[in-house]
Length: 337
Image (cartoon, rainbow, N blue to C red; front, side, top):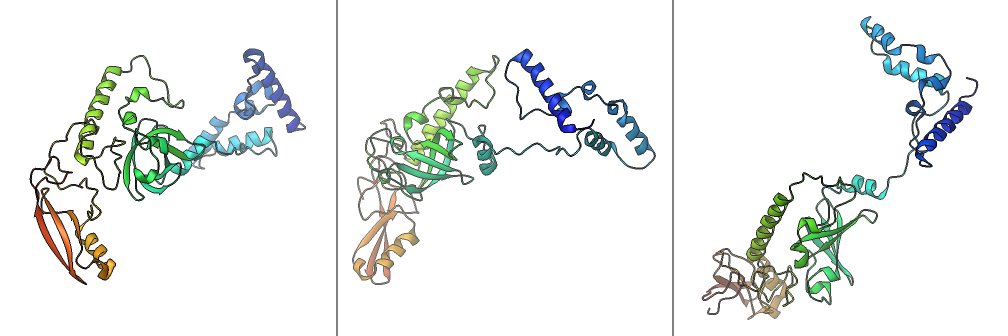
């Protein structure tokens, strides 16, 4: 073999012609490997007559180590002198790059899956969310609520932890589109498009069992929303992470009492869904301007009491417990105090 490059070109053209004669012009040049795609008799040399495996076993039996890999490299160095055995590096595609940087794939992130994230920024077109694993997410303005939304700040606040549902995974843009609309939460898993990279469901897939699982998840989701007193996209313009005017379960019915201390649905300017230390700090930071004023928060003692923080004089705050009666839900304020 005088010139290995000429020989490789001859073998490549012969392999390509044979392939296209059977399958048409679909030959993949990047995947062509002469070590695997070329039959031994096409090399026109005597190397294939050498039984390298048996020779390597004899060397190993004599206690001189394992030499099969080294002998194989010598064989291909003889056939392809000065040729780099490594394949050229190909830049990662959008899907591969997304998997490398985030560790996620179509199995872990797919349309219809619920995810939890933190709102990091509100803009004119929606809210930016950071998911677990620092995966960037985005909630378009149209997906913040079922009704019309003027501004993202009306629905979510920066720093709020939200549970959203994935509507689209944009691997090329390194982003996940999310939704807070109740109609998206109520969709069955079968209504979401299946990623093309995943194998199709076979004929023996138990669809009836999948529907039962969907129903159980829907019931669990409804009960969780009632417990949290969170109405997504309700007609009253509920704000996630802020005050709310709605305390129903999302379907127009009153949610049952749970007896747990929870956030209150109160829009009064003096009401705070905050802890004891946070309210005290707010009063002290305001200084003399808050003397004689008071802030109200849910009490930690029970679900039927409020705590009034009254600034008597600068640096002196008195806490007054107020008992609530005739409450509709845990999230509402008692009709009698």
